[in-house]
Image (tube, rainbow, N blue to C red; front, side, top):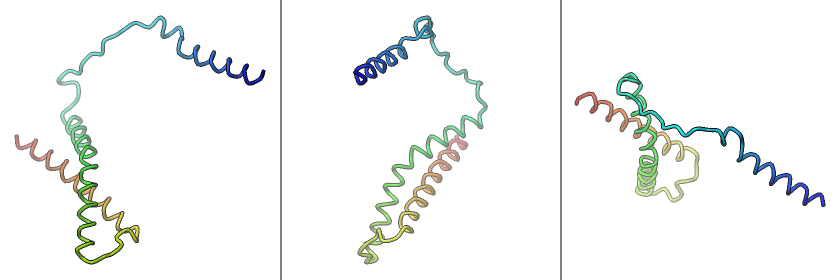
Length: 112
């Protein structure tokens, strides 16, 4: 009996949570697009750099990992995951490569 009552109470709370007076009386609005001069240029450039940096991290992480693995295999290291320094090297090199890509985009954008 207690189990049934708690299930009905939970179902009622979920239903009432989805049908609120705010949702019933809400008006449909169309979002207004940004205007050209709404944000200053440095803020737009910073946002672009952020997008490029974080967008390139997965690719540079993969390439850094493969490069470190190939380098250690060529050096004759039989078990490359034996220490934490290996992981730090991959993370630091991936971050540096992503930062380099973002800075290169910034410099090339300034040259145009």
